[in-house]
Image 1 (cartoon, rainbow, N blue to C red):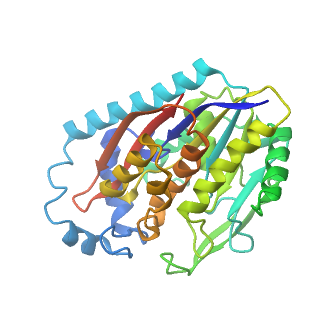
Image 2 (image 1 turned 90 degrees about the horizontal axis):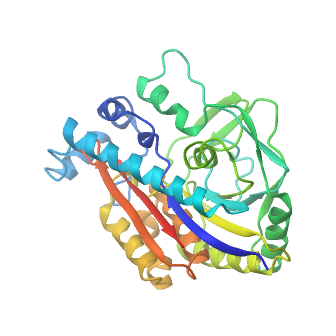
Image 3 (image 1 turned 135 degrees about the vertical axis):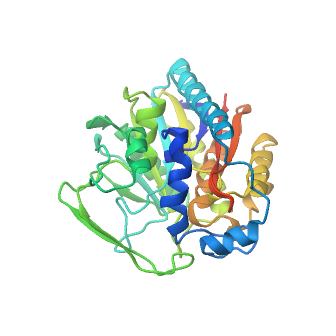
Length: 351
């Protein structure tokens, strides 16, 4: 019988791979123009000036070079500690639960759950035009700096798909990513109130999975099974309760597999961002620490919009890892602007 021997939760923000001196630059070039700043208090999109007014003095004084340097050090320690744990446990396979953001899925096909089970998946490093913001260029390496074919545990992927179908989860599946350039559109729907278009380009392994290969596996990939959850885009985001049930089913699927492999499961993304919501973060952490499914299943959906929606990935992995002991390695809420833009970056493990 296969078994899950390790659970990991990790943020995958560009800020984790970006020198701290670029953090205020990112706030200036990105946050002030963002259309996806969802107010935790109101559950709706606000402009940067509106968010700044709502925040008042809450986050003032947290944008000093000294604070940013300390937080950056904490983030590197968190990443390093999870990478060390993964190397030490050395599982045979890593199931990665993450989400797609205008990479491989658009509104011509947006599944709630997708499992990839090809033999390999191509990782392509990010490229930017010459006039792209310096902060983006500085963080690109964190999502892959070497083009490679990442091995996939196709037999486990196939088993997961078949088990999920029998368990009442109508998952979609993929065996390859198209080689030709393609693009698409997202929205308007929900908080994405405009039609956002991505020009055709050659895609590869999504950022949430590529981050794991580069930062937590140090470009020495263990065979993976990528599971995409549509955390981000209305109207078919799975509810917290559905993600929790999905995680329970993943564990049952692994344990029903006629194989003796040691499996790790990893949540990539989160916690709250692009606007800090430390209250919802603490609810999630409490639910995981107490192994309290009621807390995790009842998280308010209006607080899980925009990038904070990636908390759903943690819910799934927490449910799959409840038989293991939870440890919060670190929790670092970074306010890169006085409006509270930035994110709460978390690192956790179940062993």
